[in-house]
Length: 108
Image 1: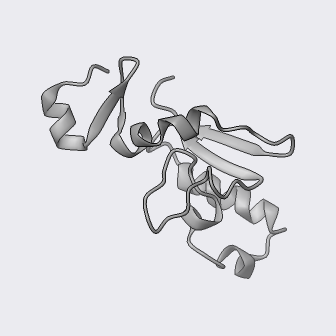
Image 2 (image 1 turned 60 degrees about the horizontal axis):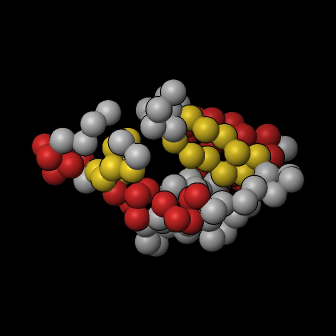
C-alpha cells in the first residue's frame, strides 16, 4: 500500500521500504529489526482485525491450564504485548520479552 498524504494524515502512518505502517511501529523499527527470539519463545503473527485478541486469550488460557482467574490478572495487552507497539503506559514486547509475543503483519 502506497503512503499517500491523505492516508498519512488520516491514520498516522509512515512508510518503510514502500510499506505504510503505523507511525509507532516505524518509530520503533530499529528495536523491531534487532529483536532476537529466544529458543522457547512463541511468536504469533496475525493480520489486523482477524481475531488476534481472541487468539491471545485462547493461548493465555492454555498457558494458565484453564484457570480463568489467572487469565484475569491483567489486560491482555499487558499479559502478551505486541512487539511492534511501545505506547506508554503499555509495556513494549521488546523490552519485556516473554515466552509469548504477538505481532500484526501488514502484508500477506
